Length: 486
Ligand code: XMP
Picture 1 (spheres, rainbow, N blue to C red):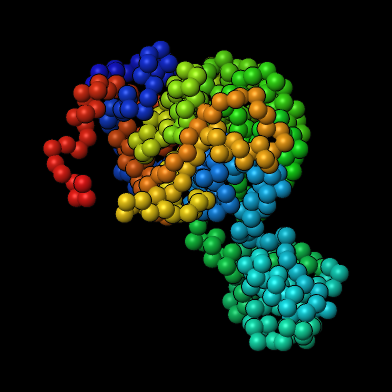
Picture 2: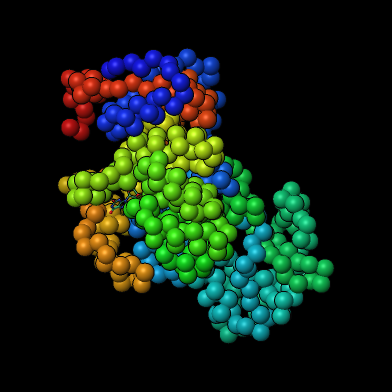
């Protein structure tokens, strides 16, 4: 290992750019003096200019990684999921809506029933949407409430009017969390409709959402207490972006090479037509960043890295690529030069908390992972047993089978590139997301501790990189022993 002595701030980034030392395995952090214990280290960060997150981990928009289940689970833990786009625009909107519906203090988009409907209709709505109660409304006016208990043993043809609870406890629109909790406790109820002064239904508070709010206190939430979610779009697909805009907190450009005149033009138009945060990418060079911020007026985040993904064969096929560390370093330097505070998302090739720390240390604010999340219970796809071990499927979004599906559902997909740039396979099953994220956040905090940094910003200042020879790499791992299970 060659130790690098302290030099001006972005020297280390330049070192990475100027050399070929751009892989996660070529570098390590030289331990620095630490003033804090790992438990006092904060890893909160920003995903995009308007989205703060408590856990700097973001799941890739891949169809074996992020749909609503992953996005809900990750946002609850403080990270953020980016819903993939290998489905129709309508389906993607539904996925985003599911995340937004998963919890909120006051649900605005409430399922209701009319007093003249039948018990069987109520059961159908409740089962289909996995809910346990329905406010009963006549027009917009609240006239009763119906819970699963009211209909459990009722005749299917009975009308709702005769089984609903008519004297409903309600809350005004100004209700606070504490007041709602008190009212629900005093009356031993689990659902509290919110009404305006004319008795019109304006929302619903549920005990489940209040518990969830307390249980997931670091969750990534919007101003209404709903979980935040992002969605992937092609910059050419303005229609899809507009359909998603109302339901997502960020739109994330999902093209392999954003630094292209037509794409820059399309992104410029998109930035003007949507209000969600716009994350551009993927880009890999300082020039790409300069051209992008020159062309697109509003850039809220940058996805950095080309060709380093675990399912990616772009670099082998085309010999073109901007490995993640190199890309982040280039972009971080130029952002500093231009005095722009745009968060960078390091995308591709991150396998361990140490890799994540390196990506953050060179200037990223968050890291995006595909492979790691694909192995969790919450990713789409079934568990598969191979040779006594469990696996989950993964495929690159440029793999032949993913491309085939995209052509079927996305009329904006083009056959311009006749070659596959991704592969498909299986990743070892890692268990529930919570376990994996606990491991990653503990690992990241420990790594920051070694670097002598108390938070990510501090890491940008204090990280001192060392380079690793292949002999050092060999010597650094577990050796001269047999592990159980080998
Ligand atoms: P990891 O290493 O975490 O990387 O699995 C995830 C990132 O890989 C990118 N990705 C691809 N890149 N061809 C590519 O060139 C592909 O087929 C492909 N699929 C995913 C993407 O940036 C993702 O976030």
